[in-house]
Length: 202
Image 1 (cartoon, rainbow, N blue to C red):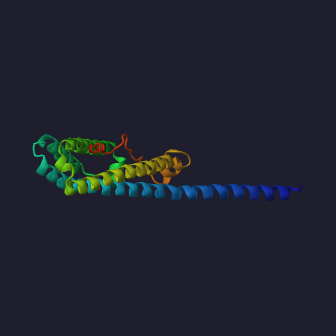
Image 2 (cartoon, rainbow, N blue to C red; image 1 turned 60 degrees about the vertical axis):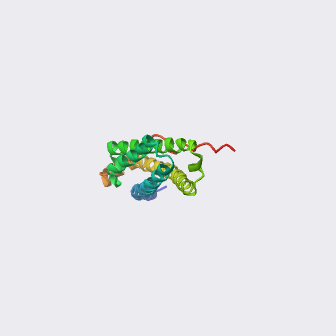
Image 3 (cartoon, rainbow, N blue to C red; image 1 turned 180 degrees about the horizontal axis):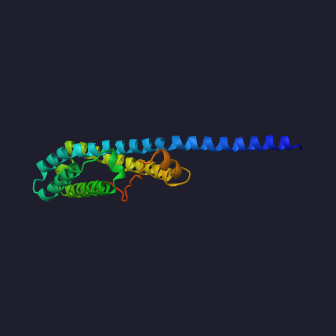
């Protein structure tokens, strides 16, 4: 094998390696913003479901009050928990702000807990449990809670994928050069959901 052939083969091999590295880097360059957008979209979807729940609560409280006004303490707990959630200012930046995210999560969990207590209290009021208005509201609320659980899971998965992309090699190197503003996204640490009241006994 002539020296010229060796040099030519070495040059081809070196070019192939350089091309592979370039293609990998270009793929990673696209991956980080794609995963970020996916996570932020999942966060937005979760906010829509949380807002839907918040919108249902005043009607639920008024309906229960019509049948069980004496349950003032539980009704107040739900209303106050909803008001605290509304006070936490949430936007796209919340997912990278640990303090605000934690406060928001705690407020949402408190609201879920208050709603669970309210629905369990209703077991003592047969007329309310069979009210068409209440049954419709409870059905909507439980469906919304299910959507919240799914949306939280989807956001968590998307945030984890994004965090892995910017926290491992080569994504960490690429993020430090091309996306220096990229910060890890927060994830929920506890499940959410209403406790379904037991079925009425016949």
